[in-house]
Amino acid sequence: MPLFYQSIRYKSLWPLKVYTVISYVAMLATVIACFTGRVGNQSMPQTFDKWNTYLTPLSWAHSIWIFIWVLQGLYILSICVPSRREDKEPLMRSLGFLLPMSWNTMTIWPVCWVHDQIVAAFIFIFLTQILSFFVYMNIHETYEDRRDRYVMGVLTVDGHYRSFTLEEKLYAFFDWFVTLAPASITISYLGLICLVLSSSIGSYYNSSFDPTLSLALLVLIAIVAITICIHRKDPFVAMPMSIGLAAISVSHTDDRVSLTATVMSISVGTICLMTTGYLVWRLRESRKNSEQQRLLQIHRDLAVRKILPSRSITESSVRVIKGREIKGRDMRIVRIDRDHRADEIEEVLGFNNRIFREETGRDDAGSSYDSIDVWMDRLKADWARIYCARGDDEGRVCAFLFAHTKDHLLPGADAKSKTVHIWLCASSPEVRRQGVMTQLLSALLEDAAAVQVNQLTVCTIPPTFRNMVRWLERNSFTCLGVVDASIQKFMYSRSI
Image (cartoon, rainbow, N blue to C red):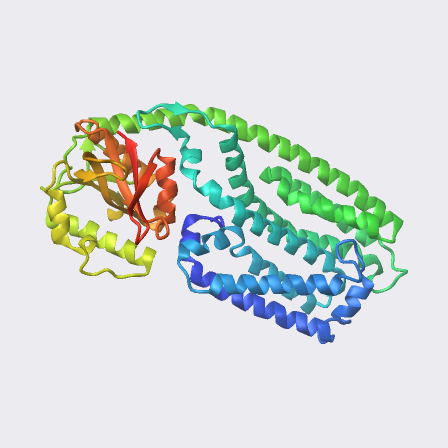
């Protein structure tokens, strides 16, 4: 299972915290032992003096290492400070289990007494991971705001489908890069360590030792990197290898090792470039072949929903048309109105209260949003219904949208207007950014087309529900103005 898989992102926060802290403590203990000379045949300062590279110049080696360890300590604090798990998602998706895995490797090598020629490899991998992390934190949130469109294509309410824009293609490539590249670089991390070590085996114990073994290992590691790169169609596996070989070719004192490293660096780099070109071609072909299939599936889903009655489904909450269960992206869309059983409505109410407490950290017991009586009164309004998405085999609620018609004064208007108003909506973290709420909105818009109302409104509090504003803007809502300045409550509207 990929390290970035959704169930891991949302269900493994505590194991990640424990594993990260333990790995960091073990790594620091090993570093302290290395500095004092208790592990290995020389101390870490002696290692710096002996292994002077372009990545770790002699005068800056200590400062670079201390800076990296401080950054790692700050990462430990950020991953362990109590907060909502959604706030931890960028940390879990960008580095996740990869960084403590690297710490484990960093702990093992010094214990084996071969840490003295591995400084450059450590510096390279950690600088790469830290750079990837900060790039991810600053850019990925922008991409996530548009992810629903990039995964399924841009689907308008009336069922039309348009192709990706250049900006959307760039963000789609970025998503592929930030999820694939860190994992690939970590895979090549062990190989890069072996490569740096193998380049010095010939002179590690005795300067006159024949470097034949170094040559053989360099060739073997390069062949393994090329094989993995071709097999996985993944250039990021070979990229660090090519850079490491190039560094060895420049800095190694033995001419044969340097020449071999140069040839292998060119070979691995060429395969890396060829794999990159092939991968780009394959992505374009895959996009071209699957576009029509997605288009047909989207129109099929829309056609099915138009066949369904506007009122609720049967008591079993399973819709069957011509013997087929109708689902929307692996979940059923259920319409609930005043004629439904109270326990179904209470189930949605309980889901709403749980999500509200998790999102805000408050328990507004006794408020209008928490009262079953208020919910039942709202369902008595004209054209009032709850659109509910049920997932998994047990049919549990994973998202809902509560809407009804309402006469109210819109911000900036002189007279009241009748609109279809979304009173409440919520989705569980496990299904967010997967288009579930957008499907509920599509079902609402299809039914609302029969109502003599041309406007859909919703109110939200951006400081509390910041993701809601992004979702509204993606779905053509515009801000009408402030409804309650004391709590920064705004109203948004779109045409039906």
